[in-house]
Amino acid sequence: MLYLSQMLGEPVIDANGEKIGSISDLAIQTGEVFPRITSLAFLGPGKTPFMISWRKYVKEATDEGIVLKMDKNAIRFSYLQPDEVLLARDLLDRQIVDTQGMKVVRVNDLKLSTSGSQLRLLGAEVGIRGILRGLAPWVERVVLKIARLFHKPMDERIIAWNYMDLLDRNLSDVQLSVTHTRLDELHPADVADILEQLDPQQRANVFKHLDDARAGDAISEMEDEFQADVIDDLDEKRASRLLEDMDPDDAADIVGDLPYEKAETLLRLMGVENAAGIRKLLGYKDDTAGGLMTTQYVAMHEDDTVDQTIEALRALDEDHPTVSYVYVLNEYEKLVGVLSLKTLVLATKNTQLKDIMFDEIITALPEETEEDVAADISKYDLIAMPVIDESGRMLGIVTVDDAMEVIEDNAEENETKRTWLAVIVAVMCFAVFLVPYTAIVLHFFGGTAG
Image 1 (cartoon, rainbow, N blue to C red):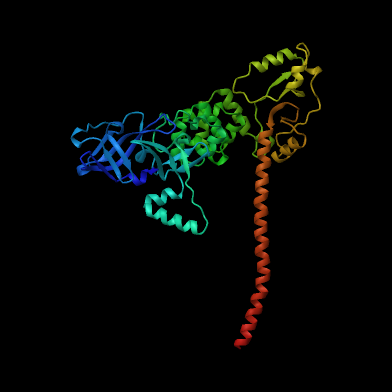
Image 2: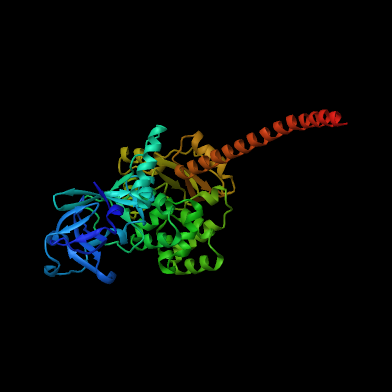
């Protein structure tokens, strides 16, 4: 096995045994699971850069240098091709996304495999051994021996090429591998986890190459402290478009965290209906049912039939959130019943909703705390809870996923409080012990000194 760090700077020897330069880089042709080295870059006399075809000219490659098949006078120089990537320039010491481990890592070295005169890239070394080898091969060997003495193995951490995605350079069009899972093909929650590990400039670069649907889904999955920053860094037209496509409650949460001027600009760029829905949600206090609810739900009237309701469901936009219940309103738009999709499917098509709806509904008022709403959703095993005003008109619903986030946040907060309480108790106990102990010591030694 060879490593890029070992090869850089080593001599390039022609067929006559004459040194014509030193290795500066290797190029791969992308699109293979383990890409072949296709070009050799080296520095000739006066540090003049040259590039030649690997297949045409390279006879042998070792960690001590490269031997060519031909005399230097027979060499014809070439240029980097569009589908080639330079390992040292584009990958070494760069940040990449490990699409298997779902994390951002730094490339400390690159592992290569030889087969005759052919050389292939196996993957990136992202562990401590790559750093040590970059300092000097003997440093790695010494540290490994010391680690073995203490029974602390230092395994290589290799990420295969087909699990790598590139960040630091604009290589979005590079086909990393025929079996590669690109960043924009991952689940939005995984994309969000990765984006949160990037600095703002890298994050913005990634967003340029995600379509609006993927970008919006990823932002919705990000932690609250990142969402507003991401939207604030985007072009205003695109930011407005992404917010418009999000669930209204998610969009309202983000807009509420933006500077006032930026929030107003984005709302003015939206469609009137979407902007009005977000403004309405912004009118409710945080940590309440109103602040937690979404206005995307399905409601029909009690005189509507099963067939009409099913047609209404079929007409929903493709990106409409999952529907668990159909809410039933009376002629005054007040909530009077609810039915599940199962009930709807099993009923005959001419049946009116008032004849099959469930009228004992558990609801919340908009000013109720989100903790109480989440507790009721958990207690009654609901998928969603309707929020109504004092007159019984329906305002929105709180979904179970939002309720679970509240419960999880409260659990983390309580755990933090318990940790701090334990620390305070420990400090107090130590102080209770230390004060009298110090007094006794001072008295004893003070008395002795006297």
